[in-house]
Image 1 (tube, rainbow, N blue to C red):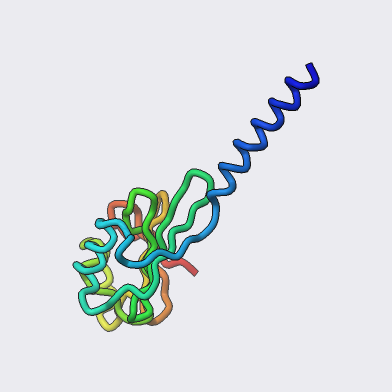
Image 2 (image 1 turned 45 degrees about the vertical axis):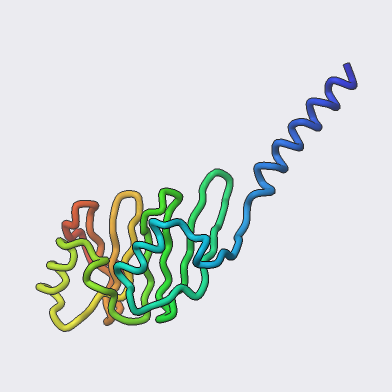
Length: 146
């Protein structure tokens, strides 16, 4: 009986360690990044190169964090879909959803989008004047975020 309990605890410990042992960050060269990510970057940021790629694992989730030569930072989810773009300068229009881009061009014609983020239920953009705008998933304006 005592041996059985020890074996069960050992198995549980090994499983727990193997699940948490995979957590953490790993720097990967651009050549080892998924094709979907490198294609996205070459399409929307053709004049930038990848300085660093980091794969972050946390339990069962996995994200890719990319730093480009123009200091833009990109984050992709486990499905290799873009979820966050943090730029130092104006982002390319091609990375901003069309409806959001139209709203910004109409309401803030002298400003540009420097950051874009996708959450579970909304999208956010930050302008070069540091105003943050919130939109729903369809790109409809919700509010200015303080």
